[in-house]
Image (tube, rainbow, N blue to C red; front, top):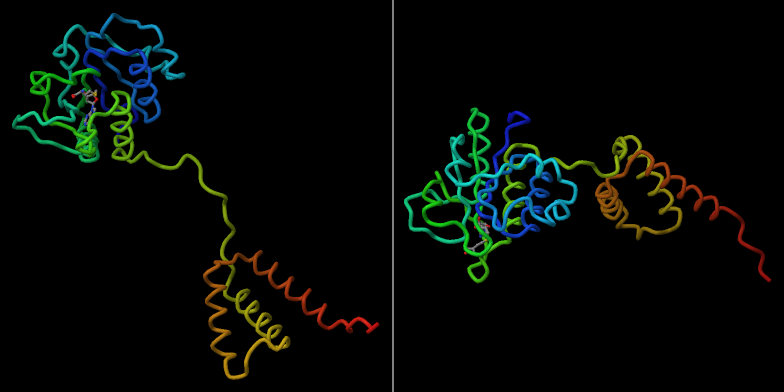
Length: 251
Ligand code: SAH
């Protein structure tokens, strides 16, 4: 299992828009990533509007480091992945994000430090930057519209990381349902239903057996709980009592 602190590092190369950096921090916090490295952010750092866009994911921003060059930002990593929408003609493995994160989880479990780098909003990563990576990660997007927003690209990688690390569990479950009724309770329900229906003249004589079986199937499909069976039987008893009452006097 992945140690709690082990998660890939996110590297943004020359990010420009405060919104994207803030939303990157937010996406990282959503999926349990915390190490953000910024390579030469455009128009300086810190930027106005980043905190607002991070929407409370300030721990990621506060821990973010700024680096003058990419080699400096990746120096301590043992594995680097480059995300890109475009073919680069380089002799490199090309992975979808789920496979990339499965491999990343394996490497981190072995004590490696893995980084995933993302390019500039306008022009992505240069071929030289991609050449520093061990493998390319590309999303299965349409040919007509392959380029994702920078922070959304980080979001998808974060999501796949969480799944690959075995951390993708719902944070809450649906209503806790009582146990299904026992066979005994169900059989009692079948017989009171069948008797009540027979008393009401519901079954054509030669079809009783087959109709009764179909109704048992219906009831099985409802996956009744013990309480459901009690309610159902109570309802049948009420109907029975009513049908035994003498008919109202004719006027
Ligand atoms: N216009 C740029 C894309 C910029 S989007 C280009 O043509 O390369 C900003 C960054 O988001 C990209 O550099 C890449 O890191 C990531 N990204 C966007 N779309 C992607 C995709 N389909 N697959 C992988 N990464 C993607």
